[in-house]
Amino acid sequence: MGGKRPKTIITDQDKAMKGAIAEVMPNTIHRNCLFHIKNKCYNKNLKVFAAKGNDGLYEEFEDIVNNCLTEQEFEHLWEEMIKDKKLEKNKYFTRMWEMRKRFIPVYYKNDFFPFTQTTSRSESTNSRFKDNVGPTYSIMSFVTEYQRIIDTIERAENLEDHYSCQKRPKELLFGYTIERQAHELYNRNIYSKFQVQMQATSTLTYREIEEGKAFEVWQRSNQVHKVHRIRRYIVLTDLTEGKEEFSCICAKFSKDGLLCSHVLKIMIEKEISKIPDKYIIDRWRKKDMRLIKQRVEDTTVKTSSLLRFNVLSRMSTTMNSKVAKNAEATVYLMAEMERIDKHLDNLLAPPINDDSQNQTTTETQVQTEGNIENQESSSVQLLEDPQVTQKKGRPEKAKRFKTVIEQEREKAKKKETNKKKQITANENSGQYHI
Ligand SMILES: [Zn+2]
Image 1 (cartoon, rainbow, N blue to C red):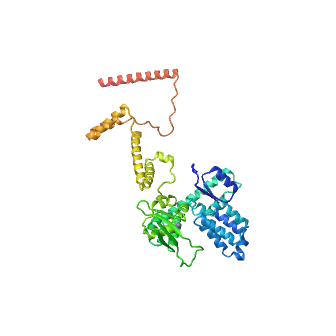
Image 2: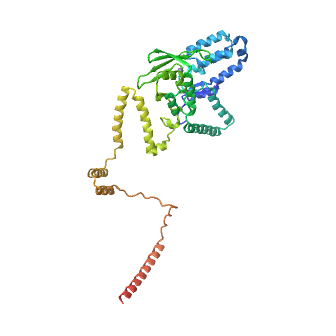
Image 3: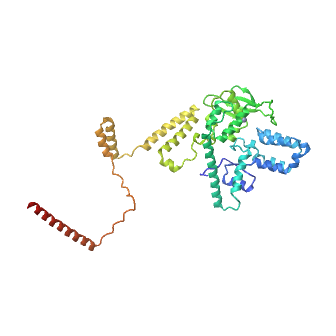
């Protein structure tokens, strides 16, 4: 996992996993899967849900478990339900109450557990592992299978990105600029979830509790599809330029990384034309729209100056946009930048020695005089011997040292050759003189 630990993890109620996660990843928030617990509850209590006096228990149970906005609301409504339906002695309901903080969404609504209430995501991941990794697998084959599954997921994500770029934009639901922005930035899957939230805004109404700061949002009562319990959602805002804060009591943005219909309703009503960047998280963006590159190979950063420049630009832009909203933070960052700049000057300065000083002087002369001849002469001084590169093909064999006898024979051979050359030269010169 590249030395990183997940912030959150969701599993079934396996005791061994609970112990292992607490030991290996003590800072990771571990929760149990709501979908499995609810399913188990229905299987164990079929008669209870079907009983005559318990009409509406299913709807009440689903609403309390899924939609409560605060812990107090959940605890109050649960106790009322147990009392109303006389479930005080029901073992499974008692067990659920005891372990409520491990699976009821309201207890972890501020932690990032994206779309866990929509069961398809956790189920599809589960089934992938169940189908591909059996309990009898060796640890090595498990790791290989795990890598294969991860590769498949990554390929699917890349394909999703490809479709996001290739397919023509779907018609916007209402034509707001925030819809167009979401379409440009989100990947296809997340954009469809965003559209569901946009669609829901048309069923909502609101009132301003405190001008520009607090709003109450709720579903209109004249809807065909009634909700089990109408809730009033509080949206807090700071519309000051540069701040642009939005938060909702439902905390969908913290949990899913996506703005809820309640915040979007206020954005529409207040004619906000752009969703602030901080509310479009990198994880849900199309890959080419991300602010921070996810995987930057160390070796590549070490070898490519262009990539280094891009990585640094992204990092500094992200930091600048964060800091620019606060005057004190801006002063601090500017002072730090000046300090770093001075330090970098020292770090990047060429080493001081006589040769380098001479070179610098020559280069300065070239720039001031602007004389081509000077440039040429100075460039000659700056030239160094080229590096000796290896020849192509098989390297030459090292020469064998010759024995004394061999050396003497060679000397004698050379002498004889020279003598012959001299005789021939004399004869030739004689011919010319005749
Ligand atoms: Zn909300």
